[in-house]
Length: 338
Image (tube, rainbow, N blue to C red; front, side, top):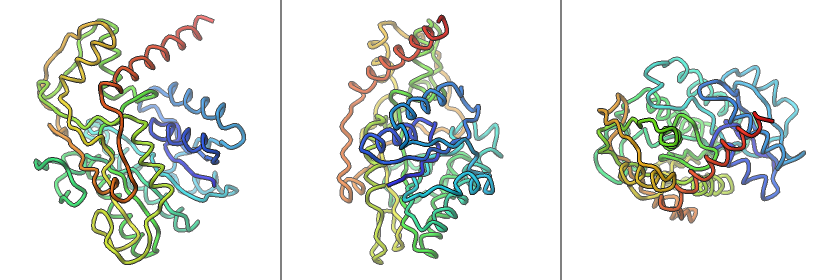
């Protein structure tokens, strides 16, 4: 089986590709390798996948929001399944650069739906826990209304879910949308809290703690996230007219993928300090526009349907990230010296 993975040089796309390759599958990775964050780690991820996958891995550098370029790049490719993880990420950046989100997250998503329709293949796609916006009832359930997004990023992800529902209804395409909660782990993103805090603490610089530190997040380790993605990849929703998770009677499901625990931000900082061996200097700041104070995933739907069972607590996952971070940056420094 050959799976097309968009965002193939990204954090979740890299790990998903690695899992699919490890069990003998073929992967075509698609990514524009843009400069939203340092492209070097994206290039390093792709290099690792090429080493691991050999001739079962192909990487195509193309912007999937460019429909003609995407079709040309995949003209000779056989695709059995699509895992669409590519997007313009970041809640705060969407306030500064809204047009990038419309192009990548709306136009790009439509292009992948059209590709899935033309190839008649199922697709798993990335939504986000940010669609829950200002909802105050915890934990967040896929049955909750999500009509009040607090950022353009969240609005584009809700729009992706609506477009997918339409395509599932009109063309009977098997589609699964995944509302990811705060994902962290090795090979993570340099723009996310875990990386930023680790970098600052190691450098003896203050960390910027928004929400005055009074925030909770459903921190989910990457291995658990990928287990959920692959389970959805392997089990497309049936077109049987029965109501699916998220309420659709078309072959379209919506799932939360989280750790099903809401952790105090201060506890994560303590774990980082312990793993690094240095106290953090904290600069407490107010909430940023578009942010929410608490997230907490109800994962009962994906657990019931696909046996999803997150297994990695922050007490285990945070030290594993710090260990990888130190190894990765030590290796990069060594490479630059040689």
